[in-house]
Length: 410
Ligand code: C5P
Image (cartoon, rainbow, N blue to C red):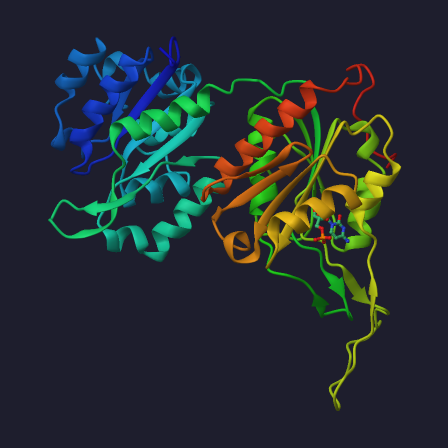
């Protein structure tokens, strides 16, 4: 019973897929979880609260104003739950969650939740692809929530499209795989670089690249959730800082280089997920360059941060991880990088598979060989990378904890 003793709140929105939440509650309980149910008013029109009272032995919470809730049930449940699963997550519910509304029992409980939040979207394909829903889904993801589905298939009205709620078993699988990690990286000090770098030409122009920073931020979020101490050295991105990370904001490759070189020795693991610019303009003009005829840019090489850490490290970091974005000869180039930069693991991906996207398809290359993973969300890739790092860490001596993590003096 993989979910034995886990405390899970299932929150139902008002969609036709609410009938599948009955099976979800059963499935979570079958796997050993203790389940409490919260329903929006609309959800109670699709399935009766009595059904859940019968299944879980406790009446579901449906109304913040009911006298026996004493006004604090959302706080208690939010505190109690190790995970909260919103299924079905309707378009409206996702919008309300993304904008921080708390005007019913379900939203108030979500607002108080301390555990991991899962959303299983269920709606018509046009509602799912609506830019508002996509933006709300992204906001929830950026805050660390996990989206399960939706999947393609027959929708309630018989049309085929993407918007169907994932099957209860698949939702339970996602919850199980998430909760089963626990604190397996507790005590590990992990430095992660993320995002692009911007190399200034003049006060208003720069050279950059299309990196969104999502891969590095996903690793930071997952490492935090698995108990690690995380330092995130981030280039310019449009992502919220993961709660609990020590974030160092930088702009150029040289700034990132300085930030990493000052800190790498106080970390057990360094993961270079940033898309560092290899070149920068040879000079930064102090005034905006005036438009005239053709302009030739002279570029000079930036320092290779990963290679520098590889060359200078002695005891720490015990595990050094680089990324390799390639358009051809993926595995061979990654292996070359592993050796040249003295890294322990290279996460290789084809440029078309990950850059600026939600998902990634990567190959993990280390001293023992190469493992090609299927396409999956960047958060799932993050867990795979961390699994491999944990395995590498377990083979090396770790510096004692009392040599505290420290950055440079301010
Ligand atoms: O050699 P290449 O740029 O493909 O190597 C990619 C890896 O090296 C990534 O982990 C990236 O973060 C790192 N890198 C770096 N400094 C650079 C360029 C890349 O640390 N100037």
